Length: 218
Image (cartoon, rainbow, N blue to C red):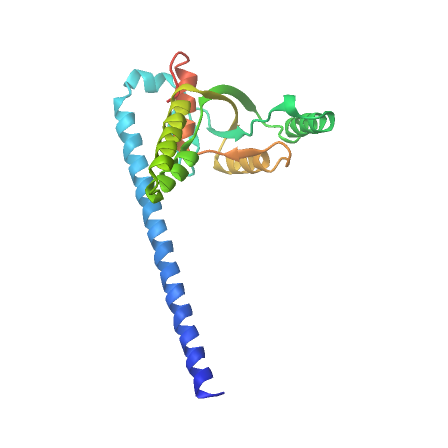
């Protein structure tokens, strides 16, 4: 091996080490931010919990939030998953019947207690807003900036005024082990009917709405 090849190989190794070091640094930063977010969420939940009257807590079936993201109740555990909303009116006959069979398959494979909830939930445009904010930060054209800002106002109005019909699956269990099994079964029931997890904040909003039917989900 020539001196030049040795030098180039050494250079590549240093570059790879530097890249790995940067990746590890990014991963540590992400983990730190994740833990910080979880800590802030717990603080927020504790603060909200203190605002609730004791009489209300005694009458509600939910006791606490577990570390795994589902709720402990007076009789066991419950969790909330989301069922992907589908526009069945735009489907052809094959797609329509396939979807119906998928739902039937869920009902047959998941034999434990469950509850399906339909709710008008505020439209979420956070992803579009995040993209537009990036474009606005990079924009140097006055006319284009005016268009982007107008589009941003539209998205915020949609989020404030418009709601989507969303469907949720509430599942129950006697203990942690049963909840894990039930959750895995519900999530992996089939491909056509998509069931997926949601964040804790959304679960709390759903429960709040169910216990305060005249309130608005914000």
